[in-house]
Length: 182
Image (tube, rainbow, N blue to C red; front, side, top):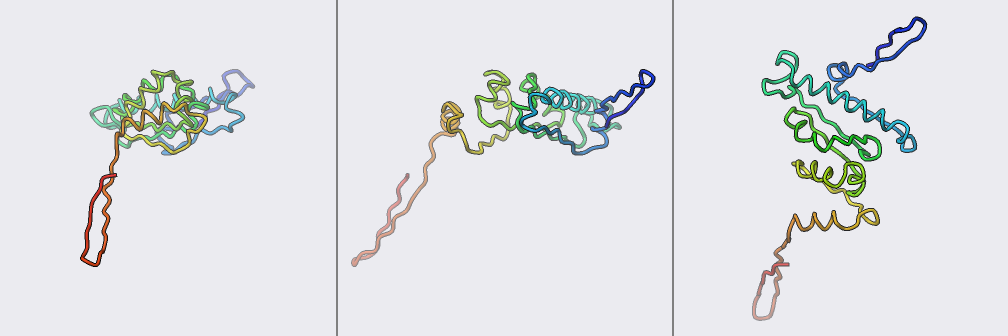
């Protein structure tokens, strides 16, 4: 997905061609090691944004070029941005979720904890993708990294949960049963 050219004689310059990733590579992975996130995070974020821009261009192209008449991708694209606050520090991302969804681009953002997302995207920036989410997953954790707001807000949003339990007793005079909401 890189094109090498000699813009200056004797000097090779590589150019990233994001359009080929969109057209030719159904799956691409942007990876960096945790220790190198500070050094490569900006590059990974820039590559992610460039590929996404190419996907939006493809979605808004004429239907013969891979899009549907409504400006959506014919074959949806999916992003899984693991360590999004550490590696893909894309500050505009929260404002783009709804737009990407309308184009057939699904973004899954994985954060270690809520406050990590607030540090990266701002307090309002975390509310944008959470509010636009059709599926929300909590994978555990929290502990000392969560100040209790996230789990408290999630619990309040879910509301009370009740289970019915039934108790059956057998006596010399017969049998009795009762139901109780717990």
